Length: 420
Image (tube, rainbow, N blue to C red):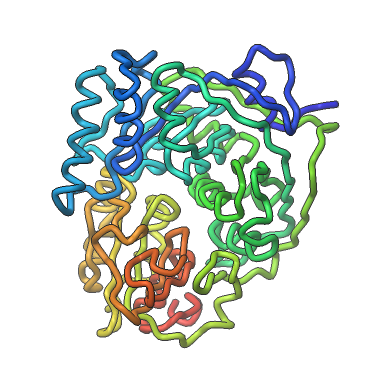
């Protein structure tokens, strides 16, 4: 029997010729990632065990992005722990404020993760990198501590669900809408501990930014990882960025899938996920005129330059609604700089939006946009659980950047075609 792309990548990181779903393996890790919330726990465990040296500092990446610039004493202490550990162990891939970006935007941009890699991160959205033909998954902080010491991770090979998207997307519909639609179809536990393999002509036509947005939210369906077979789009994206040699894998024709879903998305509208689960999805037309208080454009899902371009296209020459707070968070310093060069930041500020330095910020209710009781946010982030962005009695609606920008102008959830 053949292997899926996920199985092939895992097998290539063991001493086995092949692996299959349900098998337990001890696999070599190419990149081990931690941030300012999760890495301090891993570092504490590492040091509690009396370990003096990491196995390979070049495989470790530390990104203080969740509460930076530091919002309080505790977040400053956490960042200090990362800084000291990086200095002690000569970890070159430590990104200080001013160089930092949101981790899952930063690592692909810098070419730190490359096709064929096996990547683990103490952050659930580590699954983002599957867009580049990488097996990447979120793990616990203790798994990261073990990887610091051994360079390996213990895991069970997941079953794979194949998702094939047919047709051609309409204007204002993006990768974010495809993944929201998919989660709406299968539910937040519909791919529990499985690989979500995305393919079909619609995926082949997607940009890398849209692919990254899709794989980013595989975890919202409970998946172990999301993945897309690399192609010419992948080659174009990674060729000038890669810091290491890379390899393209693809699924065998005779591989085994636990299920196959085929969707014709030719008539798909922009999607909106209603509180309090990402599976509560409907077309934007069904929720038009719901009033909102805050709009957030950014995060590891939709903080890339193409997302800001779409938002700027809609906001140019317009003002946000007087009752709205619009917060825009470029995913990295490079994204921020490119947005400056293209005049996008000027558009946002002229529209009376607030532009932040790169940070996860409001996505997890950290800072830079925490909600008060009864407030309602429309956000390009990836989760809308009760209390996720602030008060337990606030509400979060998820959408793509075009819907977010259009809605910030009207003060209520709005299809972009009503503005442009």
